[in-house]
Image (cartoon, helix red, strand yellow):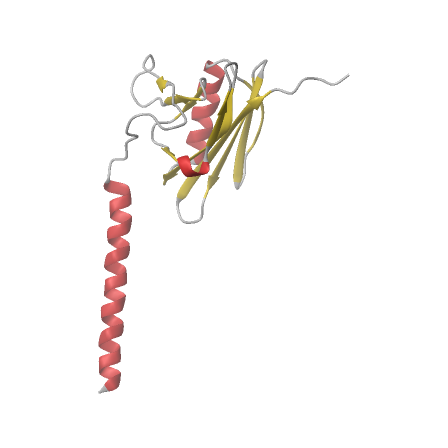
Length: 161
């Protein structure tokens, strides 16, 4: 008798876990994600000349796909009257890293960044430079399906004699 009750409770628990898992996965893929307004780091605007979906500018001249969700609790920006620098974190469920690499390579070069080098693997890196600053973009696909992007922009160091 106790064994039958235990089996029924086990089956109910298993069904409940399956239903909750399906609901969690279903909601994460069906809800249209939008960035409401500008984040605290100050996206400087939408890219309007290229049409919808081309992203927002962060740190004045780094375009980020609008599908990526900004993570303000992991990011920071340092700003002076002459310069804005910082580390920005973004994430998105089920986003292909190779499409991100294509997006950043195309748009950064269009915004006058020069590709210095790139590393592709489990973690992918793109490094860009301008005459007065550098940008490093790290992209990682996590085992649970999320893609995380970290963008670092900083001043270009002066040469020492």
